[in-house]
Amino acid sequence: MQRLVDAARTEAERGWSEGGIPIGAVLAQEDGTIVARGHNQRVQNGDPTSHGETQCIRNAGRRRDWRELTLVTTLSPCPMCAGTAVLLGFRRIVIGERTTFQGAEAWLEQAGIEVNCLDDPGCEQLMRTMQEQKPELWAEDIGC
Figure 1 (cartoon, one colour):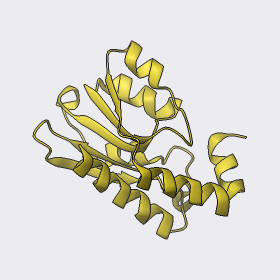
Figure 2: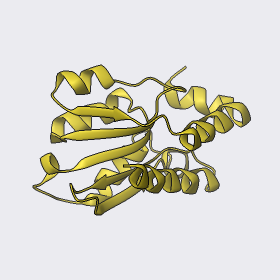
Figure 3: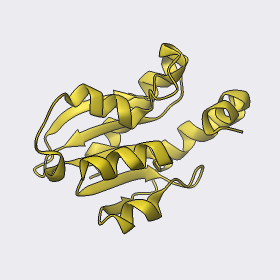
């Protein structure tokens, strides 16, 4: 799973380098094959729904195998992204870190989705950097 978190973190770094929010995601098959990648583009697109997870899912296109896929994200999913995961029926979600933001993980678990957090220091550092350097952007993103 660490390889997949590393791939999601690369997406998050890409978003940060574009002036956006450093959250990234990948979708993977059971064997670890990545089928889609995405990063938060809310700032770049001016679209409040362009979170890392939703961009990754959009990039996956039309599929019939959602229940066989694992969503890997650098940060604990917000209610919108958790709802999308519940709607599509992902079997598992792997989270890079939840220290800087605790999302709707309980909802995911109640829906029968396996949730694992790797407490990745690189994912946490990206979020801490953004929170320190652009606190107004963070407050805007989480609705403060």
